[in-house]
Amino acid sequence: MQKNVAYQELTRTFQRLSRFSHLSSIASWDMFTMMPPGGSAARGEALAEMSVLQHQILTDKKVGDWLAAAQSEDLNDVEQANLREMTRHYQQASLLPESLVEAKSLAGSKCEHAWRSQRPANDWQGFSANLKDVVRLSREEARLRAEAKGCSPYDALLDIFEPDMTSARLDVLFADMKSWLPDLLAKVVEKQSQQSFVPPQGPFATADQRELGLEAMKMLGFDFNAGRLDVSAHPFCGGVPEDVRITTRYDEDELLSALFGVVHETGHARYEQNLPRAWAGQPIAQARSTAIHESQSLFFEMQLGRSNAFLKHLLPAVHARFGSQAAFSEENFIAWNQRVKPGYIRVDADEVSYPAHVVLRYEIERALINGEIEVDDIPALWDEKMQAWLGLSTKDNYRNGCMQDIHWTDGGFGYFPSYTLGAMYAAQLFHAAKTALPGLQASVADGDFSALFDWLRQNIWQHGSRFSTSQLITQATGEDLNIRYFREHLTARYL
Image 1 (cartoon, rainbow, N blue to C red):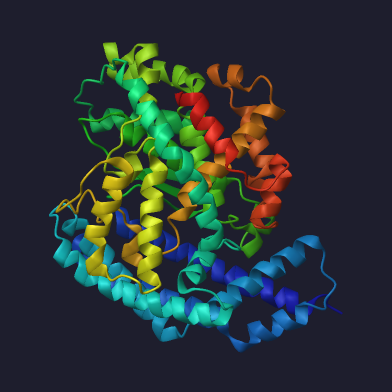
Image 2: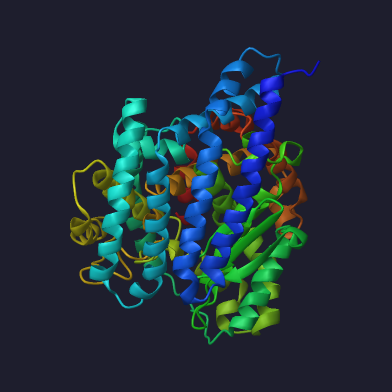
């Protein structure tokens, strides 16, 4: 007699869902990177159809029956964790009608595709018309989820990306950060104003920048047999663990933005490529949360990538591609990569001013989803918050203000807090890694990252979604999320 019949039926169902998700992911990557403009509407409809199909499979009454039956089956710890994640996926999906899933997918595809031309044109009016439709549907989704969970609409969306996180807890973390970050930022800017930096002199050919990015990916252990690098309007990491697609964007007048965009996305990719293959196709094999995902990209980009030791190791590769110039002396190269200069663009921001970009977006999207403001209020609020945090005005500068990100185009409300949570987790993880690996800095300077990556694999990557975020971080570092490591890291590096 077959053991755990209901659970086995569930694993087959989720394996099937995983394969459909694979196809959707690659079709989305193609849409963002390769697809000609004329294919937009048809691709949007195809992706919406796939979303509906997956929704139908996941919300079938049989799945609910199997989940109930599996609760009393004889499952081991891993299977119980997988069942917990299956139940979460089922409950999340069951709250939404099929019509809303399809409408949201179509509206998101339309908004994102139009954004690509509207952003360079600074066309807020055109963009906001599409965004209003996305917000309307996102609010409906948030309402349905909130009624079931007994929480605010925004918290219901936040829970999709960051299970067990609430805006009340975020407010405490961000209030702590607000109490010291503006002063620290001012002190760093003042300190660096006394220094002289030599900016790199371009142009920097895109082909050479690409080769340098590929070399950095190789240094950082990216598996090119299971992934690739391409170009998109907004850098991202997509695909599936067996075929990770990362993208960047190039500017021939600026060398380091694309390079560290690649380093950032390589952090995401290494996490994906090292998720537990033994559980492939099951929810337990997926990344724990968006904040843990961002902790890996920021671990690579900021904790490791902007460290003195890594920059020293990277410099010969820069010389090989772009020759020697004053900007590429060791002292200046490190200083230039660690300079703090508040700017408009989040993805190019230094790590001291970066949290301001995140808190600004979090406060706006929370008010938007909770119905406290409307889409037309966004530009003025954005300008007000940018001036308060960073002393910069975005009045009438929509392309570098509220139109710069891609997340809201497809209704990704609730995602932005993950970036700063990820920075906090990354600092805590790097502190724990340094404690566990006393010779780490010397190894990094020599280009030997093996012990560091083994530590990440052992403590984060191999676990997928087996544990809650709190359990995962506590096991890796000895305590739950503690913001003090982020503050200590910024203070030590910049002051």
